[in-house]
Length: 303
Image (cartoon, rainbow, N blue to C red; front, side, top):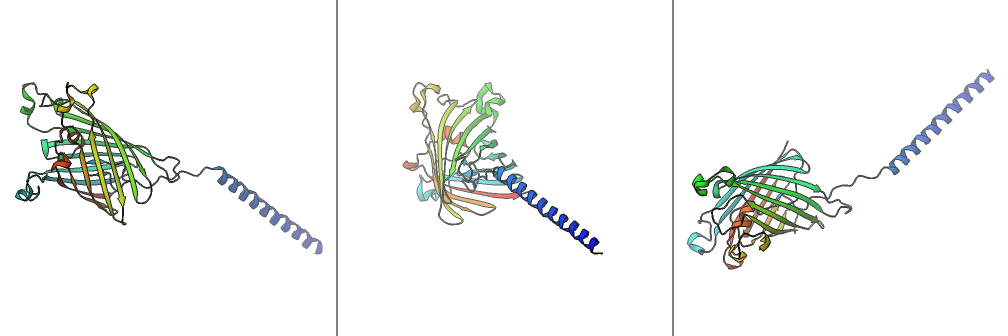
C-alpha cells in the first residue's frame, strides 16, 4: 500500500512539474513573440474637423461608409452697403453636394452650383497619413474636381461641342496637425478649361493655396485660407499676363463642429464656390471692398 501511494505521488509530482514547465515555456515564447512584433503605427487625428474649409478641400476624409451632405451659400459683395443689406439682398450663389467615403482614405463626391448651372464630380485620396509618433510628419492628399458647365449651348457660339463645358482642377494637399489647437495645410494646384467664352483668358492656371485652423474651445475654431493664382508667362497664352486680373480668394471665419456637423460663418472674396471657378474668374479684391458673407453647413451619416 505504501509502495502504491509512493508511486502515485511520484507520478503526480512529475505531471505538475511538466505542466508548470510547459506553461513557463509557452509564456516565454509569447513574450518573445510580442517583443519581436513591431507596434503598428497609429494615424494622427485629422488636421481639420471637416473635409471642407470655406471653398477648399482639406486633407480630412471621413471614415469609410460615411455620407457627407454639404450646403455652401455665398451672398453678394458688400460694395453697395445698406442699399442691399451688405450683400444679403444681392444676387447670391449656392452649392449642394454629397460626398461618400468608400474607404478610410478614399472619397468621391458630386455637387451642383447655381452659377453657370455647374455640375461637379470630386475625388479625394489620402496618399500618406500623419502618424501620432510623427514618424510620418505630414498627411499628403490628392484632390480632383471635374466641372461640367450646364449653361445653354449658345454660350460657346457656333462651334459648340460638349467638351467645351469641361474644366478640371487638380491639387496636392500637404497638411499637418501640430497639436490639439493648431493645424495648417498648403496646396499647389493646376486648373484647366477646355474652352472659354472670353479670348483674353488662359486655358491653364497654376495656383497655391494655404489654410489654417486654431481651435480655442472644444467646438469652436478660427479658420483662415487664401487661394493665390500665379501669373506664369511660360504657360500663359497672353503676351501680358497682367490683363488676366484674377484676384486671390481670401477667407476668414469661425467654425463650430460636433461629431456629425460642421458650420462655417465667414467673410471672403470669391463667389463662384468650386475651386477652378474661383482660381480663374474671381475679380473681387478682398482689400478693396470685394467682400461677401459665406455660410457652409455639413452633416454626416454613417452606414
